Amino acid sequence: MTTNTRKLWLDVDPGHDDATAILMAIHSPGIELLGLSTVHGNTNGQNTAINAARCLVAFAAAPNVLVYPGAPKPLIRETKHDPEIHGDDGLGGVEGLPSLEDPRVLARFAKDKKTGEIISADVGMATAIRREWKDGKGCKTTIVACGPETNLALFFAVHPELIPAVEEIVFMGGGIGLGNRSAVAEFNILCDPHSAQIVFDVPLPKFMVPLNVTHTAILTRPIHAQLLSGIPSPDISEKDPLPPAKTPLRHTLHTLVSFFAESYETIFNFTKGPPMHDPITIAYLVKPELFTSTRYRVDVELEGRFTLGETVADIWNYSAPDPESWGKGGKNVVLSEKLGVQGFFDMFLECVDRCDAVSPLNQ
Image (cartoon, rainbow, N blue to C red; front, side, top):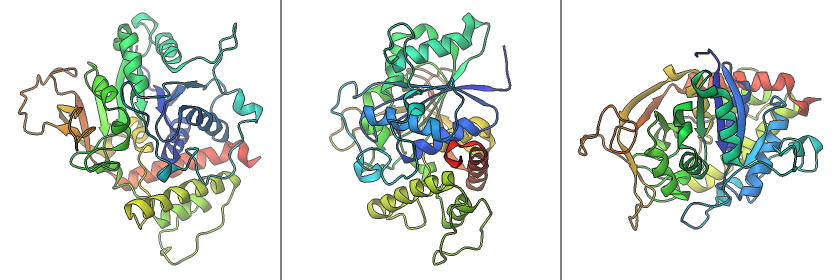
């Protein structure tokens, strides 16, 4: 069965850029967000689950879109967080989001109707994907991962029978010759490289959005100004003051990107604005024509003293992989190499406009 609406399961570790990915997943045309699992990463597992629930409320997700907390730690390595970039709670500096005590936030956690216990990520994913699949009579689901891939590794290990029910795995992670939390490793992969390798070997199509691409999607001052005002501001300079926020939602997004911008300027010397990592995955689902990509064999370095977590693309086919296979021994990943940046930000700002029209923060 085919459908024009793409079924999406989103796995995140909010995280400032994860929050914008959640917004885009809710408000992009042609996407039905089935559920949202959370994982350790930018902050601890408790905070990522809370942050996800707060975002679902603020961004006016459909009432049936719930949070399913997942793995609080990697499969093997010690847990690693990133307070330098995201603050201690994962959404440092963000103003206006509802608090955990808000009953609307508490209602966003999926619970067993009989026991009242919170439903875990692997159970939630399996239930939703199986429901859509209908033993092959329904629709496949796309899984998007914006954090460490521990939940995905556990899901595929426990539910191999659901591999045919998954259309594609899309993930933000890795870099080719480029790292951000080591000399050569990107943070999501470095947090749990063993899980990433497990997912890389799953026999399903995969689309990888690496740092090489996300570092080109810079939220510049003109984009920031339009985010605040809702009006294109192509002529604003770095010295011009930003306009006031048109609505409370836009103020919240302003505080989100501003904290992220300050972190990236301090740590990485990004002076023009912060890179928009995670929401690029959602853009791919709706407008794949924005991307230039090539299929390669990609593996994760699991043993190197200086290179642990590096994603290695076999661009010369040294391993002579099976060109047909998406699994172990095959060309397993479509690697994004270039993004139509203007088209991405046009889509992002359109999603903000849609969200602004319905967000409860504006009421």
